[in-house]
Image (spheres, rainbow, N blue to C red):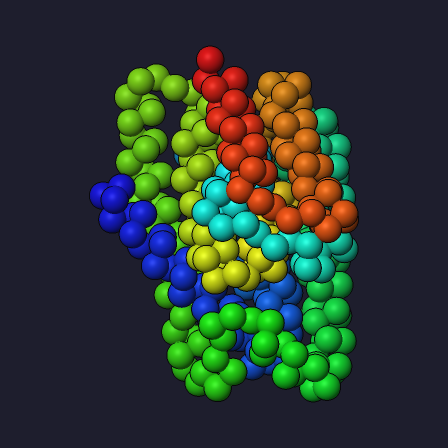
Amino acid sequence: MCGLGLVILLLAGDALVKGAVNLSLRVGIPALIVSLTVVAFGTSAPELLISISAVLDNAPGLALGNVVGSNTANILLVLGVPALISTLDTSECKTRKTYVFMLIASVLFIGLAFTGTFDWKVGLILLAALAFMLADAMREAMSHRRASKATAAETLDEVEGADPDMPWWRIGGFLALGLVGLPLGADMLVDNASIIARTYGVSDTVIGLTLVAVGTSLPELATTVMAALRRQADVALGNVIGSNMFNLLAIIGIASFVGPIPVDPEFLRFDLWVMLAASLILFPFVWLGWNMSRIWGSVFTALYVIYVVAILF
């Protein structure tokens, strides 16, 4: 079952990248913007499903651990592994503004965590911040769309493997396959991994920070690997940044309406700060024009392994 889930994830990730890139071409919106919205929300679907289910099952530690652990995994693992396969040309990605939004979302999330509980009032604040960021992204997308007619030829040259004449039904099919297949594949993997973990008496919080976090980050990993192989670093980086914002603002924001989510003191002492540190590591790649080479890929991956070992032992 785990192997089948992984195959579904890889195929769905490829379909979602194809659909997102070609959708951006058809409507005149940069692939980065599509990655920050359609792709990011689709690959965050497993986190949403897991978190709501965890709150309903009276396991809030798993819900919070899932989001915090997934955000750390998204940067160190989801960007690290693809960089090991193929250098990500992040120097050309225009992600400064959205990266700042992700940092603001991270700081806001950490600040609200110190209230002790994510309840519906805190959820309203998180969802309001998400609405503001999405509105800004849509405004920027519409502005680009109006100016895109003059640069359409350049856009086509920049997006490898894109088909500007792809029919709408085919684009919709790719997006649907990706959005349905990613959470399905992740769910199969997470269910089996969680059963194994519980057999050995591991706590819900640790399961959320490790096995479930990695499992629900597999859609991002599958999408990012495919984007890296297609030389579409903007899709890869945009997917991670957008997914992290959705995880913090939308996932916990929505789950808090299902039931209160108390914050384990260990999150305040360690895990939230690791998540923030991982986000800050992206600074030179976003602001200084560094490319994410195989060396950096190995560093990111090694840091994630060290983090997991620290949690488990």
